[in-house]
Image (cartoon, rainbow over all chains, first blue to last red; front, side):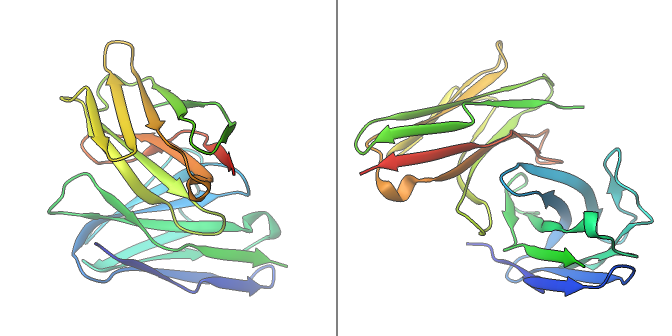
Length: 116
Length: 111
């Protein structure tokens, strides 16, 4: 099946620093990738839709200048949390849509971010 | 935008019994409804999905039903096993665009 990787799996940073998370589709091309945020014991909240070669579309309430998304190739999207604060601590998960299967999204393993 | 509600939030069943999780959605344009299973600290895994042109789909012990008129869909797990214990999420989408997830159901199968 389709494989999506994320790096790093876990990161601890100081408040005020920026953190970059990578999401890669390993065996398929993903024209669209999605970024979610998940708090403990809660659902996945869609943050933004990332389309290769164009600007990301952010969901209402998500600050685009805070969460920078770049989708430079068909297999890589990055999420940069800028000037991170403790309230940004969360589990960030990406997913990628296989263009050939239209609807199915495959999820990465997630990145646990802790901002001190 | 789409709003997906999911019930129950927690569910405990005896091993071998059936489990049913229900979801409702608000946007009649939604036409793709996947179900994901997420174990603690791991990624969501697609277990079954259904498109709006189908009323029911089955895959071994797992089945999903869809009622477009009422805008609700359900996951049915038969002959539950301890390894079925996890959090299950439903989602609604229009042609695979943004997924809007339900709030999740924590299923515990008691041996």
